[in-house]
Length: 235
Image 1 (tube, helix red, strand yellow):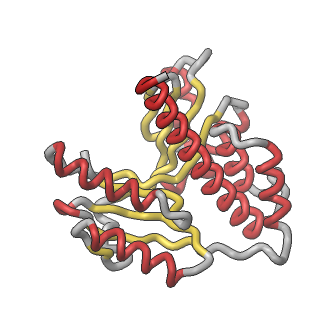
Image 2: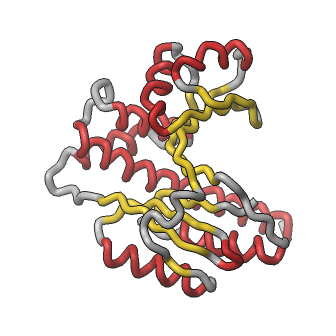
């Protein structure tokens, strides 16, 4: 079997690991959504979005149902959503969204990750001028006319619509996320995911060696169980 088999095995394990992390992240999102507004997706928009995103990454239905049931239990721990901001090596801004049941553990871990890479955790709000929070919707492109769709979604707050790898990406302002979600539901489109993301206003160019340092740091942060998402302004 040799090296080709080993290469495929490594790729498969990485894919499984990535999928497992996505399931964990979405499981937490489902728990937080249920605790925030109840277990009924028809009356809980955040839960409805979380379930939709879980389907988009092929999270098993029984795991989704188990997360909802677990969240409805008084014994289930509460997660606090905390954003950490800092700078990695070479002046790259990094913003980390977390959901944690232990703030001391999470901030300690963040400080270790940043400091070992030659960076530092900054003050809350220190990166507000670098990132803008936007709604990002991914829709299956098959059977859709992107120009026609753009005209239909402008009133719901669409700022930009483009196609990427078989998906139509719709960007909205943070404040228009709910309106766009409702518009897409009414049109019964095949929405793959709907997320609030931090989009950098400007990006920094780095050498290949410098970029590898940032990628290693981001990968290390993403491995942390408390981390939900990581954003940076590297080009």
